Length: 173
Image (cartoon, rainbow, N blue to C red; front, top):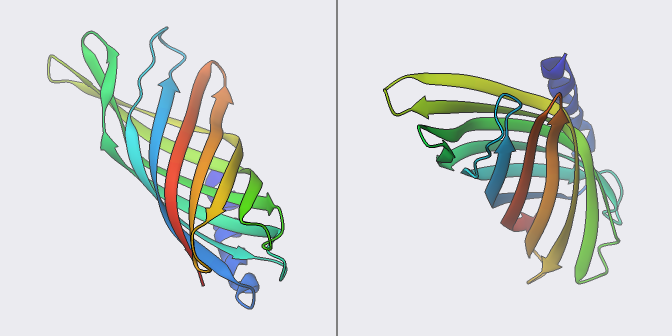
């Protein structure tokens, strides 16, 4: 089901080809709390994003993201958790492009793949997926460059919780 929704969202991006778009690279600090433990870890990732606007005021749009883990963190005394990769597709609502500081909201689906590596040499993988909600702000640097700061509640289901704090450099085209 998640893959079908992600494919549908990706497939709709060519429909937006006549509108302006954006692309960016974020450094993401995650907090992951699996349901099978009281512990949490804060691994990091790099996230690539690509989006397009539905209207010329750039207030409604869609975007897709791909994240790749770059750092692990201790989950328990004997285990480290890392993000392998993440995928997401989101609808984006934002203040008009005439403002230098533009708050925005995101609503979409995210899929996160993780690995827990144990000190004894073993490992275990766990995947998280859920409806995701995010809030952020874009700050214009030049006409085509902007910096973003964002918080997203990625997963909150069945005791699993994943949240992200991201800082990014983005470009408009």
